[in-house]
Length: 240
Image 1 (spheres, rainbow, N blue to C red):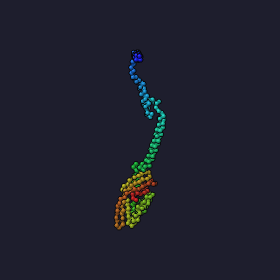
Image 2 (cartoon, helix red, strand yellow):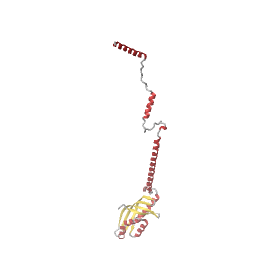
Image 3 (tube, one colour):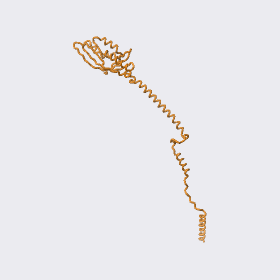
Image 4 (cartoon, rainbow, N blue to C red):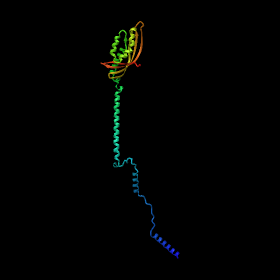
């Protein structure tokens, strides 16, 4: 009995399922195609979100989207740096100009002032020949030359250099003659000059045993212009 009931119930269920399949057709679902426009918009949004905060805006980006706050901070700093740089450059140029003005080589006119260069050479050549020549028979002439051509410390230097000649001249009847063979102006600055002098000297004994000795000399002299004439102010023999 129970077996028959189960069979009947099973047949009813199978009939119901068959009826449902016949009434409702089978629908095959296809995968949804991606929305091209929506996907593109999403990708662009993601790309925009991926831009780093410190990156510069794209060239075609409108100015309204740029960040003016950074420009306002950077521009004063640049102007301040430029001001400091220009100030340092001006100070350097001023210092360079002052050093050029103080440089003795810039003040040396020995090569440009030909007239004064020739003047100082001629007068100092005459002065050297007069003060470094001595005749035992006329010592006053040498004293006059000293007063005329020497000033400053050159007076004492000359006195020390010719001390032996003055002492021996009366006994040996000495005649010292100095002739400048060449001279050159090393420095000419207004009323100051320095010259390098080359000279020949002859020392003659005119006593019973006459004898003449010759020597060459090289020395430098400093000169100053006073009362319209050049005078020797210092003598440098390059010896200590």
